[in-house]
Image 1 (cartoon, rainbow, N blue to C red):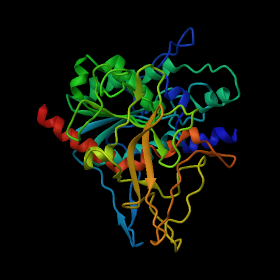
Image 2 (cartoon, one colour):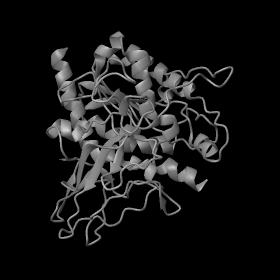
Image 3 (cartoon, rainbow, N blue to C red):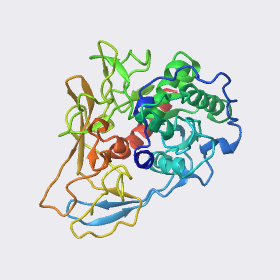
Image 4 (tube, one colour):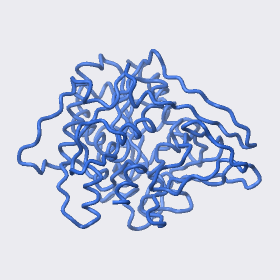
Length: 393
């Protein structure tokens, strides 16, 4: 049970379900689809004081140790939308979650979706996701009765409701992580590609899940007509990656960074490289949790040598983190490097690995911080792509 709670608070992810497309419902009589015309069916909607209105202020710590506060402000008149599907976080005891907004969903939306309000309106549906109880059953070797198709059907219904009531031909960025990314991948493949809705797609940002593409290609595989993003001004494309430390590549048993299809590889698109030049290792614009990556990671130590406290929810450490798309054997992934400098007063490491019982689960990589290590890049890339989309439409 400790593992279950730890993964809930820290990873917001369920790799097994995240990597698998929705299957047929396991229940003979699926429950009715939630009514997304009701505000209570949404975790985030514009104009509300909800999880996506959470404080996003950050303490900026320069290489010389000096500090400043970066105050966050949401755009009062955003010109595009973001549709966010959160990852596995529910602690409900059932295989699929209920539709009640709890601290689990609120916390993850505050850390993954709220910062996008700098440029867009954020819509985030509640959905009956596969829960961490299902993960516990899987880890115990029991049959998993979670209904993945129910989770997908809920998000599909929310997407349809958003298109009908809220979109009004605005461009939209799809955002997810892990299970949420897997559902968005399925939504693209099954409900968006080849439909009028494809013209609304600014981009899809789906880190933390494997997206299969033919080796050396940018389209095909899981998605038949939606290519990987190759530039910051490209629209109708996908940003996908999974994260590992540069000095700890995926072990042979990793679910992340590899796909089962012959002749295909897992996609890796580095948002920082799109914004700052193709190729090589690029410094990222990270927004890290001030207290670390959650209960399943080691606690974050002091950010500076003097152990001065941080009073904001987030921390920025300019120049400390770099990333590059890398391949090692069959694995394709985002390799993250911490540019440690023992001579400066800042920390020489960050947390983000899954650690249970003192053991680092290397097959998970840095899944806890897939989004934080590139958060600023993702947010600014969404805005730049939206501007390009607006010019073309």
